[in-house]
Image 1: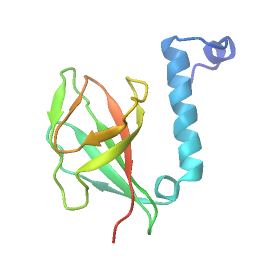
Image 2 (image 1 turned 180 degrees about the vertical axis):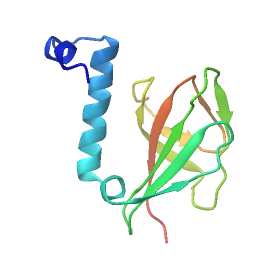
Image 3 (image 1 turned 45 degrees about the vertical axis):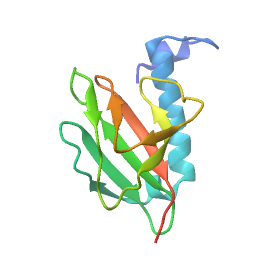
Image 4 (image 1 turned 135 degrees about the vertical axis):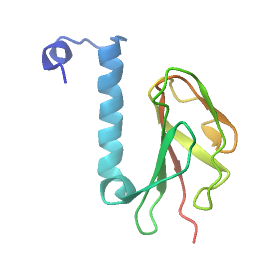
Length: 124
C-alpha cells in the first residue's frame, strides 16, 4: 500500500488509489463477517480463460471469485454442479454495484483485468 498517498486522501476522492483503498476496506469487512471468506476452503471452478474459485465453509453463504487476467473482455458461461444459475454481485474492481445485483452465471461479461466477488446461499 502506498501509505503516503493514502494519508493524503480526502473525503470524496475518486482517484485510482482511493477506489483501491475502498475496495480493500469492503473486502476486509466482508472477510471479518463471512466465515466462507475467513475460514473456508477454496476450490477451482473451470472458467476458460478466466480464473474462478469458490470459497465455502460448512452451511455458510458461498462466495465465487472470478478474475479476468487478460487485456480483452471475456464472455463467460460458468456451468458447474457446485454453482447455481445466478449469484449476487457483492464487489467489482471496475463498477459500482448495480440496482439489480443478480448475475446470470451462464452468460456474463468480464472487462479486461476485472475481478468480481459474487455470493449465493448454501443449499444442501
